Length: 205
Image (cartoon, rainbow, N blue to C red; front, side):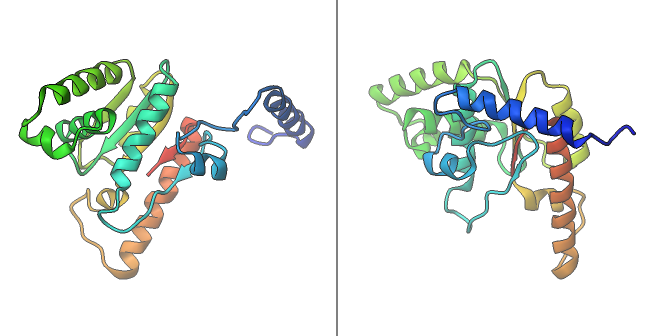
């Protein structure tokens, strides 16, 4: 019956994967995030994973997500990272990326008040960033189905990042409260998990 796989076939595939990992020194089951503690915990992000990055406002969720995008893209130059930015514009996101890569304060990049040394740093950072394949979409009203369709058109996709989940809830112009809002977040999370599985890439939200 299509859709069912015999256990003996699955066992063979599992042992093949284990053998492959055993032959590689310091092998990881998935794509390393570039953060040692995270990678020790997850052993890399695997295809089909939905990873929710949750924390209080203003503690650096977007910065961490951008650093994961950079780490993965630099480690896998032939692969594509898709970044859906529902809060920040493409221009703001690029500025943050340059800041992260160059270690130049983002506030200085916003004002343009830079020293010669800082100009040099951002020039080097821009060169390094241009070698990566990070695709940015800042449409604030995308549905999960639309994201899925866009991702299917990307070759060599290895990671999808969405910043951030609550804005997807309000994208349709409706507002939710209490249990209704909680249900919508749950529904979107389920849809994202299905998307991760269909695309066979990790989704970080």
